[in-house]
Length: 288
Image 1 (cartoon, rainbow, N blue to C red):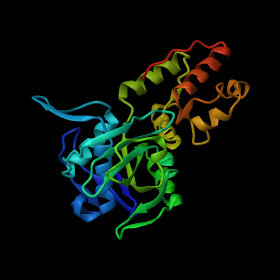
Image 2: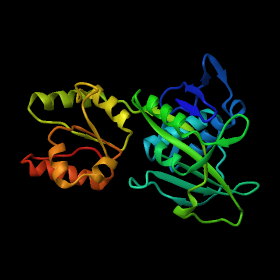
Image 3: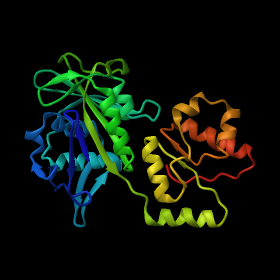
Image 4: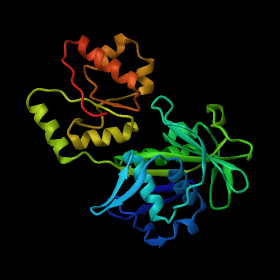
């Protein structure tokens, strides 16, 4: 699912990692590289600001690298984007900073592409790209769309870019500001049936399950409902930002009732586990 800064929603068809599919606006199949410049640049940002590779063998297509980045490569490939602009530098993704940036050689100048948490990306943007060109950023509209997509259990990434002089050949965090927002890409990573069954078995055995994720809070809540870990929308989700402001005493109380944590960094996971242990609970972890 794509949403361009030109305020258009697109669905993308296809199966697995095969780079074949159509881009649909309403009921109309469109050429994404000709129809909407913001969509084309959103796809290009996801393709270039990326370290995954699409591979094919006798069994079909697969991804070498991160599956989320793989989804970006596949969607761009469906649109016909295959050109790799030479990469000059990179700021790798870190959970704490919530974005990745790459610097590429361009024709008239060099280009910085950035992808990451929509909230983080918006905070580094001044403008957005629409059908007519560049306009002032409309953050509220973008955040509303992020919430809508996240509520459908989609993992949502924001894309942005910035042109810089040819002489610019290295990247620093200070360069990642004054960006132009391009759009959003949402992909679903549904819980496997065996995961749903495992959570149910744990619950039956008296084992409490807790989900800790880097996803948006609404995405986390939607996935937790599918896993049977949340009874209602009234159940709390704690975010990494909230955790950072909490004292150990406050977190000690919170971990007794909260089962879903979103937008967390590795140090948050450690604090959660430590406070659960202080409550006399034995903690085991699975995942990355």
